[in-house]
Image (cartoon, rainbow, N blue to C red; front, side, top):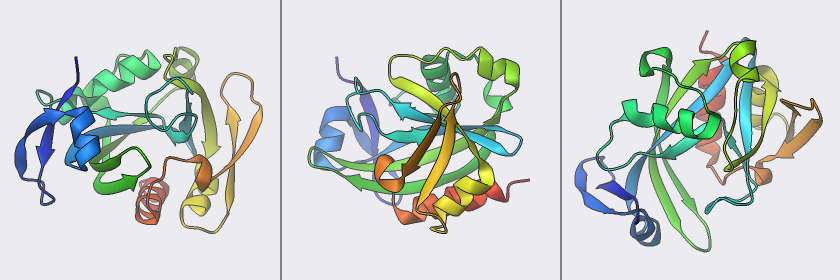
Length: 194
């Protein structure tokens, strides 16, 4: 059965409900949830599995997913549990921002109101992460390096696989096709949040 999502007008007024598939085909606005894990001066990103439906094998924020039509943003913690195996209360998250974002590919028009949060994680949290099959691996990245990457001061960024500590270098072409505005906003908000 197809996931049902709320459909919005561009001004974020509720328009109705439709299937995720139709929403992506027709380029309707819908709501998503993202959470970026932080640890001191580091953040964590994920490399998406080649088994996922959309954006196979691309780099993305730690956790992300659609909010179903019967969910509120508080239910975004479901995505953290599904993707990372961590049970987290919504009160543990820090609000970063909500961004309208449009991403177009050959097979869909993805228009999202992205509710973005952060979660400060401990070494114990990180060692207990059991990511699901949608995630190939997690990368730990220095926040200042990520900020310079986001604001176009650096063409690539270096991170380290959480388990093996293997160094991985990536560019924006390795990322989900977010706009320059998305990178500028989250880079600055993450860097200056303290």
